[in-house]
Each structure stands twice: as C-alpha cells, then as structure tokens.
Amino acid sequence: MTIGGTQFENVIPTGLPGGFFLYEADGDLTLRYVDPNVIELYECSSVEEFCELCHNSFEGMVHPEDYPKIQNDINAQTFGMEKRHDYVRYRIITKNGNVRYIEDFGHLVHGADGKRYFYVYIVDTNKEEYFNRNRNSLAESQVLSSMQDTDHLTGIASMKSFYDDVQMLLDSDDCPAELTFAHFNILHFKVFNEEYGFQAGDDLLCDLALALHKEFQESLLARFSNDHFVVCAPIGLDQMVKHVTNVHDVMMGIRPTTHVEVKAGIYLREATCTQAGAACDHARLACNTIKRRYDRIYGIYDTNLYESLRLEQYVVGHVDAAIKNNYLKVFYQPIVRVQTGKICGYEALVRWDDPSIGFLAPKHFVPTLEEYRMIDKVDRFTVRQVFKDIAKLRDAGEPIVPVSINLSRLDFELCDVFQVVEESRNEFGVEPGMIDIEITESMLGENAVFLVDAIHRFRDVGYRIWIDDFGSGYSALNSLLDYDFEVLKLDLEFLHTLDEHPHASNLIQNVIHLAHGMGVESLQEGVEREDHFEFLREMGCEMAQGYLFARPMPLEESRATTRAKGLEWEQMVHGR
Figure (cartoon, rainbow, N blue to C red):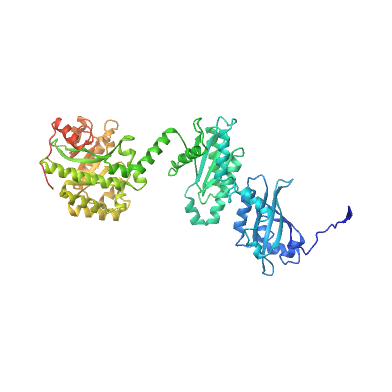
C-alpha cells in the first residue's frame, strides 16, 4: 500500500531489537497478544512455544528475581495517577537460557468489556545501559518526576504531596465546612513481615491502599510511612466512621486466616485548626489510644484526649527534673492496729507537685512512667526518701513505726531493686524490720520463679512482704501458695460493696479467715466510716487504713494530724 508516496506494509517488520505485547492488568496477568519480535527476543520459534515458556503470563516473562520489584514499580506508577503509563527495567531469560536486559514502556487502558489491559513496548538494551541510572530515557524521567509526589510502593500520594494539597485546601476560600481526617495503622505489621515475608508485607500495604482508594474516591489519601496511611475527606464524623468500618472489614476479609487488624484514629477538623500537620497529628494520636484495645476499631479525637496526651508527654520529659528539683514528694498515710486503735505503720505514697502544671496524683504519672519503662526512677527516689525520713525521726527521738513501700513489677526488670533498697538502708543505718515491701496481686504469676527469688532475698535480710490490692484482679487463689508473705492487704472495693451487696460481709470475713489460715495478717484499706472499722474489729482483721484516720500527707503534717485526733503510735521499735 502506498500513502503519500510512502510504501506501507500490513505486517510488522521482523528482526527488530524489541516488540509489542498486550496482557490483562488484573488476575493472573494473562497474555492476550505477542508480536513476532517479542517471540524472537525470547529465542522462541512460535507463539505456542513462547506461551509455554512464559506460562502465558506477564509474570512468566520477567526474571523471577526481578518480578516482585518491577510489579511494585508498575503498581506505584499506575495506581491512582492521572497518567496511566509506566517505565521499568528488568531482565529476561530466553528459551536457550540467555539473560537479556529490557526496557519496558507500558500504558494502562480500559477495554469495552470493563477489563484493564496493559499495552507494552519492550526494547532489548545492553547491560551497560541497563545499569546506567544517570542517563534516563525521556519516559523514565517523566515517570520519576511524577513519582516525587507519589509513594513508590502503593502509588498513592506521598506525605509531602498530601500535606501540600491539604494545606492548599485549608487556605482556600472553598474549604469544606466539614473536613474529617483518619489515620490508619496495621496492628503488629512488623510481626506480619517477619512471619510471612517482606513481599507479603508489601502486598498487604498495597491491599490497604487499594481499599482506601475505593472507599474514599472523592478524598485525599496518602501513605505517610511504613504501615501508616492518612485520609482527608469532606464528610462528617458519622460518615467517616462508616467508611473506616468498611475498610476494616475489607482488610479482615482479604486475609481471614492471618487476622489482619487495621486501626484508625479520626479527627473532625475544628475551625481553629488551620495547619495540615496539626490535623494529621490529632488523627494519629486518636489512633494511638486504641492500639491495645482489641474491642475498638477506631478512636475519635477530642480535647480531653489532647490534654491527656499533653500531660503524658510532659511527665516523660520532666520526670528527671522533678526528681532533681524535689517536685516529687513522699506522702504518708497511717495504718492502724484494729484492736488497739494505735498507729502501727505507714504507707509511703509518692506525689508530684509541679510549679508549671500543679499537683499530680499517682494516676496521672505512674501509668505513663510504667508504659515508658521509667517508673524505677520514681521508685528509687521514694525508697531513699523513706529511709531518710525514718532516720530523721529516729535521730530526733520521735516514735517510729514501719513504713511500707510499693514496688512496681518493672522495678524487678529495670534494676536490681533489692540492691537499691539495701544501699539506701545502709546509707541511713535503718534496720530492715522498719520497711515492708508491697507487691500487687497482679504481679503474682507473671514471672513466678523470678519474683519468688526476689522475695526470698528481701525476707532473708528481714524485710516483710505484703500482697497489695488483693481481690482487685483475677489471680487464682492457688498462686498465693507460691509466695512467702506476712500481710494480705484487701482491696478497698471490698468495703465499698459492704452496704450494697448482701454477701459482701461474708466474703470479707472469709478472706480474713483465709489469711489467718495461712498464718498471715490481714489489712483492709479504704476505711472511711466508724461502723466499717467496728465491723473489721468483729471480723478479726488486724490492721486498717483509710481516710477515717488520715489522708496521705507530708510526714510532719500527717503526724500532726493524727496527734490532734488523739492517735498514738505503738511502742517505738528499731526492728522486729
């Protein structure tokens, strides 16, 4: 055929160092057309021979070592982008076992049947050009330019691009009245990678990106890092909750046998929030609050959450300064012998009186320091201060009674807590019988052998061991048999239910009898009323503690308060 003086042929010329093929973009990537030059490139003599070599699939055309990477590259370049083209380089293995180096130019199209197809042109290049990353082709340079704003693995927006787009939206006059952010995180993603491999992990990230893309089609979305994804949608809180739930359910269904758990934090933008970074941080903080809540799919940000997290960050960042500057205080609450009404001991309780944020009760800093594995710093301070106070009273000739110190489970992991206690005792010359060591019921059974050995070290020197908060947890009663201790301290909830439940009195009586049967003393905390104190006397409880006698106070204030109430101390002792 001649057109405009040029002779055209209806067949593709052969012997070219490259060719064209077509394959389905989904499923098994089935090949639909291969031109003769591609067949020749693979050193095959027929299309049948070629299809047998490559298993009639695009995956079979690529060197097995290169396929995972280039498939991720193709997905990243074509997923959610305006330009549906890709450029990749990979090796192939011909029928005769020869390795060749390929440049691949692809274009994603949609057929009339609704299927997606890749039109691909490949060129056989030399090895030097294949490994030359400084001389990119025009197609490659265009792709790389577009990928600067795109996550390389998933193809959705990068964090920088997302921030730029969201900030532009927030600054515009057309910013929606309702704008909600969601931060998504795959729970235990590192464990998933270790168990199933990094390729499976990459596939999982791509699955989540696709689920988000389908669920939030009119929204901005991005992969921030690792397994963290963020969405900004012009919808209200209720709609976002529905979308988040849908994404969670989709991900659970993709890999039902591996139990992939996707959590999300949601933030409905307030008018005062004008920065993209702040909005994303609020959603992230909401997500962090539910990571350990298997009954929650999402968390919602509010101002109380912000204040709580702000306080948490303050505690972690200022605990060292609080110890150095004496912002931590040891308060003392008296313990009374039920039969005599005399003070037989004190419990040492730490408080934080900060000049910047005010007075902090233990519930506002102890759990945080335990979570960050810093609680030993506070307990070291408390131990030393208690010995110092006992020595001060002793040297002044004041009546002294033993003081109980609470030790955290983490103290036994983060330091040699026995040595910490002994160093302070020796520094101030206090007898071990003046200190009681409290461990909570929840610690029993967590590391039985380790804790038993630690308890023996304390008891061998002369310290007494108390089991604190008995009845607050769900430890089996037989766990008590593994430990040697002197006092069983009943949780305050026992007394709180005394007037509400008909069997509460019998329960308290039986626990006291249990203690007696084991040869240990009983102590009831939370005593606030005279009739409750009288009840404990009738039940044979040895010791009581609570606001009826005094609140926790600084040492001098506590002793002055109990003196004013007419309470006396048991006979002064220097040990037991």
